[in-house]
Image (cartoon, rainbow, N blue to C red):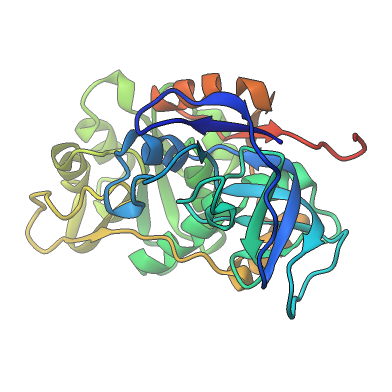
Length: 327
């Protein structure tokens, strides 16, 4: 099968040919139609994911965790899926061609445990959108629970234009939470259409003044999806009022000097098939939109990863493999 893999830690991802994986007992093999790109995909192979995911220990290592496709083989034993089922989900973040059950969705096939974060694609949900939903949607939903905001509270989202940020903005707005979207560039129109009450351009100079103008009463919680350094995270957390929460998805909270009375949280995703079902139903009903910025063929995935490293993501990048209707 074709796949995007690295031959060593911090090596460049390249298109390779690998054996098609065989499902073990309790697993399903999925013929992947679409995968989607997440920053964690390149952070893992760069060794920069920290506590979010261990670096790969053996190679070749196939990148990617999010996928949508169809079950084409069932492993031995009891299984809740059948051959031909349209499914989507999130694979593990470590693994190799020798242990394909642990990940590797930038490839034509992947094997995953049937009791992992995998579920049926509901009627009305496009497989491209399904592939873009797992990591971003589940993270957004769990971040919203972690910051414990009530209606009319204010949430500052740094890196709001990316996949997680777009989902988080919509889910927060649905709960009547006021979202301040901090982005790179002029994204006022797009973020406003997703429910942001105000948008701050981080490239236009120090954000402190713009944040005071957008929310003069202060911020109840911060969800920083972009800052990897504790100092950068702390600068954004300075806008949070005492008693609030400052959450990092990059592991920056533990070492940051935060304002007195502000609690730092380093977020860890807990994938769940039940949560996938809830998010998929919302997406199928049009309540949750997953903005897809770009669709690329598999061979262009290395260039897409390079662009994502540079920052400033706009929605999700989707990688087409076995697209519906094609052999």
